[in-house]
Image 1: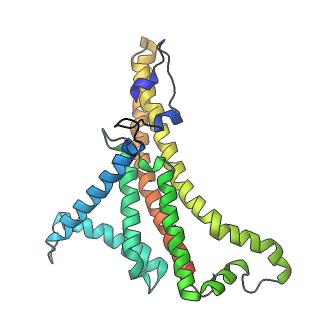
Image 2 (image 1 turned 135 degrees about the vertical axis):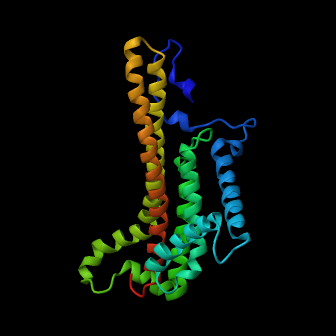
Image 3 (image 1 turned 90 degrees about the horizontal axis):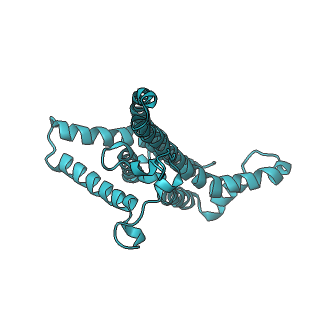
Length: 260
């Protein structure tokens, strides 16, 4: 991507959305782009890691086993049990898969040679939000029945009837449109903006160091800021994986409640 930083005349070309539209690796096949390969790689890495970590489980865990159990325990206890309550165990596999998948694909954005967060392509967050959307509505319908569940959404108990004129459209839009959109767009926007900022400072520093002596002096500051932004981006990547999983657990907990 660094080559995009220079125009034919040597001027700096700032990064844009074009840097996220990577060409297919094989012909014109849209399923051979870098984001697709990274998603497949993430599934392989996650599977290998947790199979290896649990293959020879010991009472006194090895460092590898401890790392795997720590991640699982975090999702199980801090998200599943605390948010959903006594019915949490049947949702832990989904929440655990969701968290590790998002986290791995986010962290790819700062790993050398890979350096691209798959979640900066909005289609991936849309699909994940779609799974969450189907699951929490299915849970609510199964527990309460379709009629009671939809009635609870459209006609919140304890509200004056006149207020339903305004409240019902808002609640219906919130449950069936706003929730999945905000869930996916929050993740996408953070990964997109973070990667774009890293490109600005790293590509900008590379351009400055190739310039005249006055610009060369400024270049280390751009690189230093880029390194600092990398650590900040790592924090955001972890946080966004947590927030996506946490909100999914909250939606499931709300669907399990008798009144929501």
